[in-house]
Length: 138
Ligand SMILES: [Zn+2]
Figure 1 (cartoon, protein in one colour):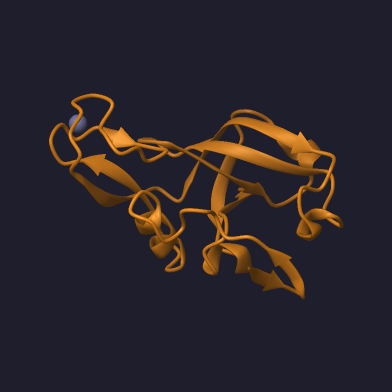
Figure 2 (tube, rainbow, N blue to C red; figure 1 turned 90 degrees about the horizontal axis):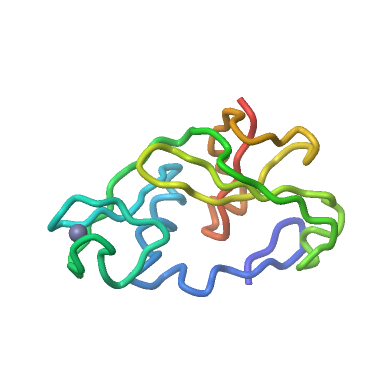
């Protein structure tokens, strides 16, 4: 468990594994990476063991833009961990950064979220400790 201001929050269950490790290692360096198939160059997110286009199992990590537009979102009114109890309601957005769509916490008022707004990755303490990505409106 990682902590922010004494509140524990869990690391993703595969943060150090083969499928997600490259993403979380890059996030700690304030970069966003996604997997790309070595055989057909198809981007892949979320990571899967096989390429959905050509079934290859060879991938490389490549940097993707740290900004994009909100593709979809949801607003939470109940905390699923202690960390969120004083942050409700809070938004979770899925951001189209071009080659892939990346989910993350929305930092700001949930009522400000709309599909299509421009957002930028925010590398806050949770992101830099490898827990979860955050986005802010630009
Ligand atoms: Zn492929």
